[in-house]
Amino acid sequence: MLERQTKGLINIDPLQTGGKLTEEAKKALIEWGDGYSVCDYCTGRLEEIKSPPIYDFIHKTLPDFLGCDVVRITTGAREAKFAVMHSLAKKDAWIVLDSNAHYSSYISAERAGLNIAEVPNSGYPDFLITPEKFGEVVEEAGKKGEVVLALITYPDGNYGNLPKVRKIARLCQDYDVPLLVNAAYAIGRMPVKLKEIGADFIVGSGHKSMASSGPIGVLGMKSEWEEKILRKSSRFKNKEIELLGCTARGVSIMTMIASFPSVKERVKNWDEEVEKARYFSSRMEELSIIQLGEKPHNHDLMFFHAENLYDISKKMRDGRFFLYKELKRRCIHGIKPGLTRFFKLSTYGLSKEEIEIVLRAFREIIDIKKI
Ligand SMILES: *Cc1c(COP(=O)(O)O)cnc(C)c1O
Image 1 (cartoon, rainbow, N blue to C red):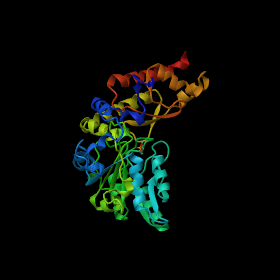
Image 2: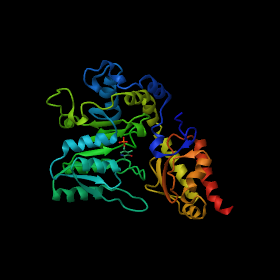
Image 3: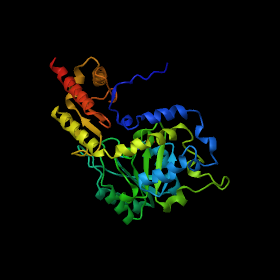
Image 4: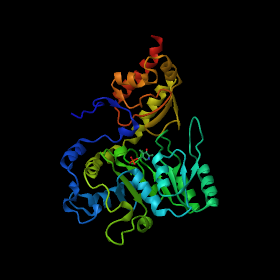
């Protein structure tokens, strides 16, 4: 059997905490698992399928949820970003992005042939991206060539920092540069709406934050971009070029639809998730494990600096793998094997009891040196 080894463990891997399937999605996974299952009644376009109810989901439910005019499903956040970048790219043009951006933002820009101007962060220990720096880099890049797009990561996947995105959107508007908000770690976890931010595009990841099996992403935009991004093939009149005609043509979208009612509800509990994260962070700091990034923190993804665990690792037989092994022994999974000094984790969706179990584990592991 292909059995998953991490079954039953407390999972604190930021990549995975928001993508766990709901019971409804697990049922959908079986029901719609066949290849091309959603295409039974397709007339040529995914978002026009009425049975299963994909039409309503893409044309009504998601635009409401994301606060935008037009939505498309993609195969992931990266495909959504690439679709926008590729549509807007021109010869010798530039993209401005924050230096906390995900690797897939850089790669999408590379694939689209854009020059990249990076907004530096404030460095250790906060790693903040400020609107002031963002504006400076947009201005500087504008002197070198045309800036066709700016991208802000909200929050970033390293520190879980939430930059002042409205201010950045206003700045970009002043420079007449469209802004894409990469909300792969936000949509499905916390309230976020494109119209309230005042940006042009918003991108989310179903398997990261919307309790979907994936790979699947969402792309929302203002109506003024529809014609440009969703332009159609000259040969196949109803197929959108940038989406290569079709995207999530199977079970991935069914898991997203099945989980959506729960996802919509859980977003309302965001304040509690932030409270839990802050509590966790303060307890870790009592163990001299320092939380980097914004403080007090505003997201469940947290990055820690543990000089003490690093020192212990030098004396342990398992070396730098000791932390992973000690956590696993205590039924906790999610910190990358080999990391001790710097690591990230997420408390998203953990119960208070589970949080205490994780904290106790760190306390015990730090006490190992006294044995
Ligand atoms: C995880 C992540 C992505 C990648 O999402 P996919 O849907 O797997 O393409 C992109 N950006 C950020 C900030 C992420 O955290």
